[in-house]
Image (cartoon, helix red, strand yellow):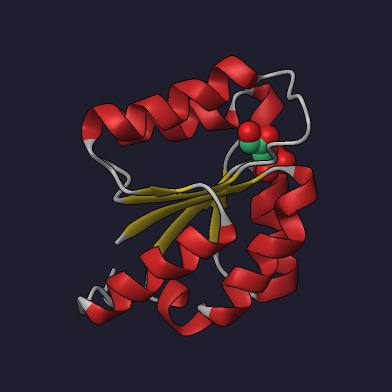
Length: 127
Ligand SMILES: O=C(CO)COP(=O)(O)O
């Protein structure tokens, strides 16, 4: 199971919290993340994560490109709805790519918990 994890700055504490809650499951998955998110997940949750570019430097687009060729199964993208982002078009492109390719995408903590619990219940515990 290939999971992409992304969080805007005000949501990074939330994604670390989520990662700690789901560490056994996430450890069995192949993880990729935008740069700063990935480093925090590694440093603060002990996960092995492939760190791509930071979001504003193209990380969302890198994840979108992988997703478009079937290389991403699930996206957790904790967006900050209260802060304008300089790379808003990249963010929209990634979420749109999820919809185009029917890849599940959780954009807030509550949805992410339901999505990850659902994967565990389905027995998706192996990479
Ligand atoms: O900006 C982001 C997603 O749009 C996240 O990027 P970072 O994980 O590098 O902060």
